[in-house]
Length: 562
Image (cartoon, rainbow, N blue to C red; front, side):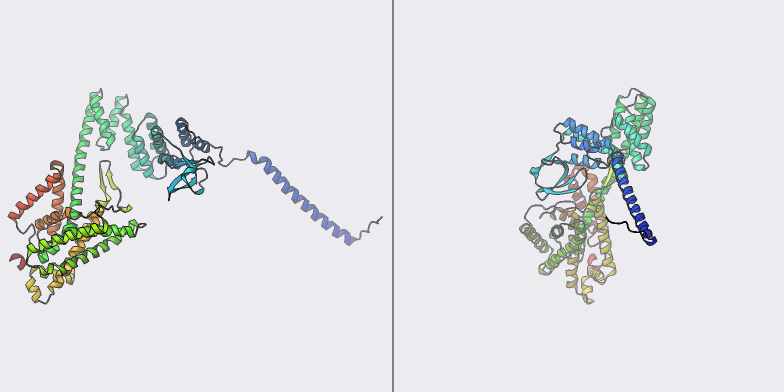
């Protein structure tokens, strides 16, 4: 047996300190164990994170059904869920981008890429990589479901943060304005603060109120729609003017229709003016280079249209070189087209035209032959087929003034571009030494040569400048039409008419002539047709030249007077 050691004061002091430490450690471990136990007990009562049992996920699972009726119920449940993922799911279903995996039975987004499908989860949004088509099953829909999807997306988008999205949602609902849809628009109007969206909401509610049994409500709706040129308004008012039993309502509808028709006529005139200015801008770009060469050298250049064509093909080639930078390619194509067409122009002048000065008929025949050679060259290099040039995103779409009037961005940009080219050319001719020499040669070639100006050098640079501007016209035309070997032939005759009508060698005459002929052509087309309109303009030019042989703004100088 062991005897109990004696407890000295020092030993008792050390043993007590260790005991307190042990008790403290035991207390801490006990508290931690109790906390863990309480957490485990209370965990089921805590709010659960969204899981596969929530309303949204349950609706997604229903989409895998073969029954279109069940899918319709799933669409309604997705919309009712209020989930932020709902709009994306419904849009993917409408676009045919919603699938489910045959093996995992999981609904996914799928986008075709390089022969395979790039997947991402619907529920959690995780990327799943690419898989072959055979592992997927597309969630199919019919026309009824497509209609339901469009209106479900529109209803959800009424609460979007972006006013443009809300406006598009209202326009979508107006296509099928039911009583339930009108109630939805009424709710949206109460919380809307954007003026454009509010106007669209008032329009939709007024259209709905036209069907009211209350005569006073119908009259108030007509007052709201009075003079509104939106497409649904005119049809609804026509029906009301023809069928409403109340004569006062019919008269109000007739008066509102008269105001709408007057506005539509005014908008049609504005649109025609815009298209006339647009056509005039194209003619200005096509003719301004011809005006310079014809005015300085007296050369009838029948290959001018092919120089325009070369500029258009240069734009096409630049886009082939920059397939991933279409928005920037046009800024590269402009100087490239100017240089390409300008170099071809200088080569034509130095190689052929300089030997034919003073013989206009032979110059005409020679440049006509050059035009055929250039056309065949393009057919050999690019094939006879037309080529399509992509429009940059910043030139796509249109500026909507209202529902009855919109101006396309590509034509707006071309109008601005043509005026900038015109202004730049005027500055070159007025403010640079080359411009001074060109004007001297234009007014009196013999005197300019006697003063030491190298007229042959001026002729070459002038022809190159005019040809380079023709290349810029080709860049502009590539944004309006397809690029083909015969592109320039469509504008060469019109270009000569502009130059002769405005005054040979006069830039301001070319500006006025191009805009005038463009406007007249567009105003004649609705009545006579495109072909007869051009014939009428040609007859007018012939008669006009008989009265004013030197055009609207005749060239000044001794050479012009002789």
